[in-house]
Image (cartoon, rainbow, N blue to C red; front, side, top):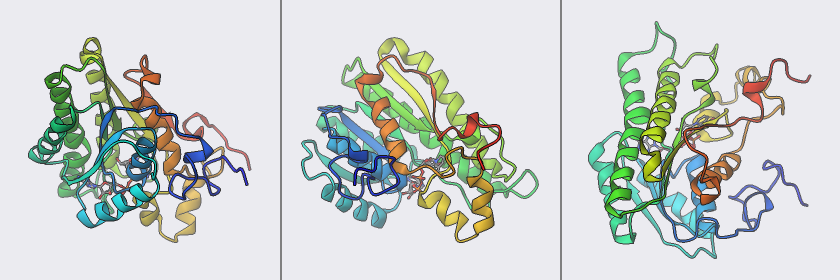
Length: 288
Ligand code: NAD
């Protein structure tokens, strides 16, 4: 069956010949990419797409067991990959970890694409009154500092290897664009910071050929959100009604956007808040 909407049996993790039925075309041939949070929903789907499109991928994550599972899956689902694949345990909130991973790619010829994707939304994150300071700090350290360190060391690598083209993609969120009545204040603040930081990096480094774009996903079917929603149908419905499509997004639908931003096809796309949300942030009232 040729379903192609990304939700009915065509995701990149179920063994089709290319995510959403697309045949790989070598869109990242010869490029070296680092993906942080690579064991998670968006990170793993992006890893698989990147491999299929000819990139070499360094998968980083704070969780070694999750990384071990993810790399097995990535290899299984990318049987024709032509690039390399490697993994590294990395806590993006620690600069030394990020620097070490980026410098590992010196042996591959340096970084071409950096996907600063790792992020958390903590269960104790709440409103202005109830968010504990330690949750605030933890969230900013991973979601904001992690993106800063990743961007910083990607720039240094691009310069070290005298590259004139580079693409850095930083994962923000639609909560950086629209307010949510179900608060997660530390998370929202962190994603606003990612967006503002990305925009400035894009302007500062444009003449070096280094592009920076922020990815803004709406709520997705990944563990980050789905574990948090659990089987609370009301909590789930409270969010689903905001989608004109009536559904959450899938990680593969984000990975497709990341592929475009990583490839040279997006050579004049810089400093954007790249929204992938099924029309959610454009909707006033959604269909019944
Ligand atoms: P996920 O929880 O499935 O994956 C996140 C991954 O990051 C996990 O594998 C986790 O182990 C890793 N990680 C956590 N802390 C880390 C650290 N300090 N260093 C390195 N790795 C770390 O989440 P996802 O849905 O794939 O989310 C990826 C990104 O997308 C996050 O930045 C998230 O905020 C953002 N986002 C997600 C949604 C959504 O609904 N899922 C919506 C908007 C934005």
